[in-house]
Length: 269
Image 1 (cartoon, rainbow, N blue to C red):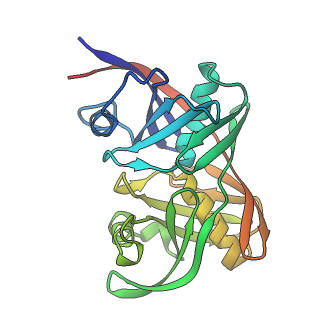
Image 2: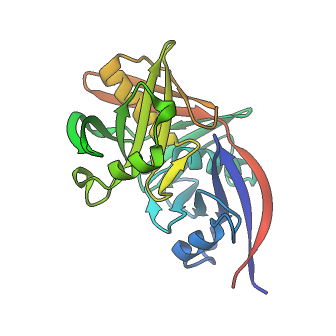
């Protein structure tokens, strides 16, 4: 019988299977992700996080979505990877790890994990797009992965899966597609955020890069200040810190929790 050891982790309701593959013995990651992330026949997760060796940092983090596609970055997944690395002595409380979106810095303090994100880029405000038969103002930003941000005053009644899928596959974002964030501004520098995630192909309970995108766009358009507080569907509030210089943003940090749920062995067929 052949098996692999894994750890199930969660950050803001976004759940992941985490594997230590620094010896590169595990292959066929896209197919493995589809199987192990299956909520009926596998361990169940939004994505598979794989830690590999890096010549540039403490380790390399790869995020394979549940559909087998590989993402450049995942904010919630990165917090899980950081906690896993600390608990398994791959790194200390402060660490640097490589992603397809660049090298990410992380610091763990108690039950909080703070990530220094890559600088947002490709910001496009007020794009007029026809979605679901009506015109909508859509804002775009890449926070490691692409995000389309749409403001709404009725976030609770939205069919995020249906509308998000239409945004995700809109021709304006071809060929890569985009994640879709629906944002309702509140008093007290608070944003309610719901996200349809590309690769998961459904709404998730939270998206780290999505709340960063939402905070950046809210600062650009609605005057939100740092730190912006983002209430996710899971109920956790994530904090986004940033510095705004003209139309650009830098020194962007994402802060939130992460936890280990269980450890197990997955039998390879």
